[in-house]
Amino acid sequence: MRNNVIAIAVAAGLLAAGAVTWLGTAQEKQANPEVVAQVPDRAVRAPVLAAEGSAVPGTGTKLRAVELPKMGKAVVDANGAILYRFDKDSAKPPKSNCENDCAQKWPPVLTEGTPSIEGADSKLVGTVARADGSKQVTLAGWPLYRYSGDAKPGQWKGQGVGGTWFVVAPDGTKNLSCLPTTTAAPTTTAASGGY
Image (cartoon, rainbow, N blue to C red; front, side, top):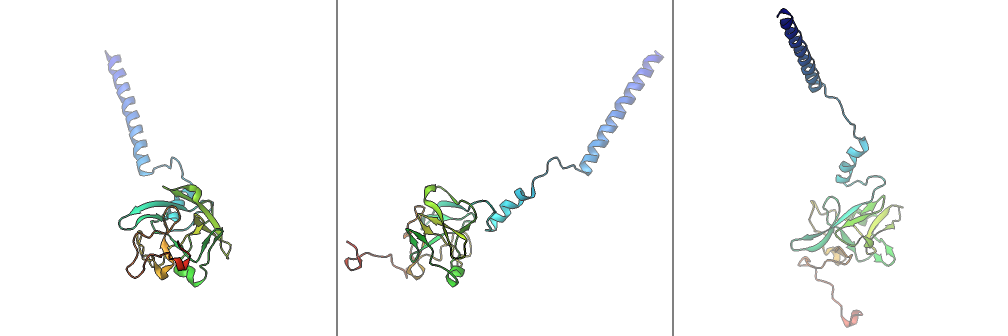
């Protein structure tokens, strides 16, 4: 019987020692957590840069077709900023005519890679070289811009400015759905080469 008591005491001691060791290890890991896998710094920063509107090297600008109340179909950038086209530019061939002061008020949508669009025909998206060598995103050949007067995503305060700036539709045409009361939709008359 004495041998049984000793065996039980030894077994209990071993179990207790094992439990203490396991518990101590678990508490140590909790106090000093180990990094199981490290995420590359670039992967962490990429979404932050994109959210701030900066291009991530080697990636293309991402556009998205949206439907807005009152405005209808439009195109936005990754930050939700409404995009515009300028009647003094050309689509065939693509050419931007907004430089210097104009580009301060109407910043061009730039890219370092191949741009893309969600919700519209990706074949319509391209680029055009600007005078400074940067690549501007185009839609159906039309260079795209943001308006500095749009303070938050979804605003379209640039719609109809000067009778030449318009929210761009997902097919590259002008969105004429919601014009300011001071700007009339362009009309075509026989005198201006219409039907």
